[in-house]
Length: 229
Image (cartoon, rainbow, N blue to C red; front, side):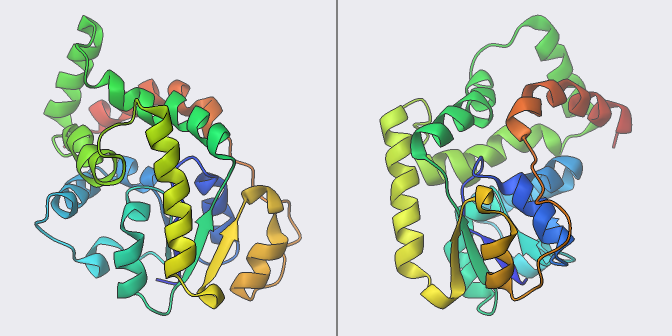
């Protein structure tokens, strides 16, 4: 593990993932890897519920890790991989809240309500065809929603306070020479300087996951159902 991302989801982690892989620090572990390979959901559930923290097994084959759920364990990962550099992605707290509440938190809150009939049918099909992925809501609660936000994701002031406190804690606990506090809008310059690599002759990746978040969900569920066990 060469790079650990301590930034919360919705702070540009998808763009940074693409950037790190272009720079040779891939494969990069991201929540999208968990969704693409549902057995990883059970691995993180074991972490969240205290049964296992075998980081080397969990991140086998990856050189970097960003986004939740990995970012919720930044202290543990920074300690386990002492030679890895740490990147703390940040953005304006109010804009970050607007983004996370419209995507990740919205889906989590929907899972707590009684779903319409067609959604219940889809959920049953997913649970039948992909039993590991059916554990995703439980895993998300254990590793992020409860661990990081005390399960108060509908409380705007609380969520922003957690976000700002998290940034302060990372800055305090990680040595300056090991840490990059980074906004993806800064582009290649500070990232490449921090990692000690040349600036590529291609534009910095811009991955707008918010725009596609809701649109991608039905297709993702359909693929899970069709793929089967």
